Length: 241
Image 1 (tube, rainbow, N blue to C red):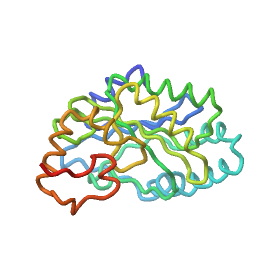
Image 2 (cartoon, rainbow, N blue to C red; image 1 turned 180 degrees about the vertical axis):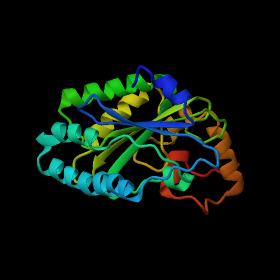
Image 3 (cartoon, rainbow, N blue to C red; image 1 turned 60 degrees about the vertical axis):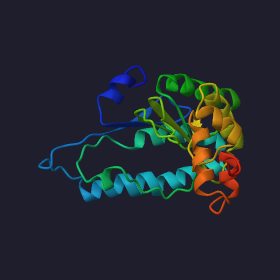
Image 4 (cartoon, rainbow, N blue to C red; image 1 turned 180 degrees about the horizontal axis):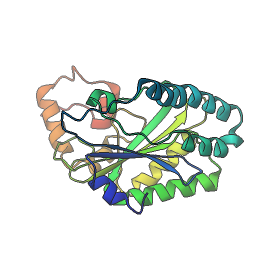
């Protein structure tokens, strides 16, 4: 899959994949626009089996087992990676882009330059193997084109998003810390609403227009009415000119 990654990303409107750590298997997802007269809905029973029974109910049990017996994770991931079969269907964007997620987890996601994503995944693979990390949740990877928005994680570069998850009853600190060190080598930018440890100083290095952001923020909110501890941590305190 990685050998043909460029073709998969460029050949679809939207492409993402889910890689199960401790395995060499990934599940791919391709979303493409179709004419309005193309109608091939997903049979309700099959949709319920895949989205509710397997992806939520059974996956919840898998994670409970993983938390109770971490040594089973490799085998459980192999099972999970083979559980869902291929399917093709049409539907509204609110149906195909939205998935019910009923198994609680912690998540960190970093945006990295698209050409660097394979190296990042290789490093994550090496780290999990070397440290015996037990991760029952898959690594999710998606893609976006470059844009010019000041605080967009894709500003100025074609981007791959690497999201790591861990079941909420299992330790995540070492895993997330390792991934954060790996993506730092390629100037990864954290998702603004998910777990990360970066502050205003490092973020200013990652966003070329951060000085403009701070200037506009100070002009529009000179007294910091809309400030809070998190915004001050990632943007710096409000300083009126």
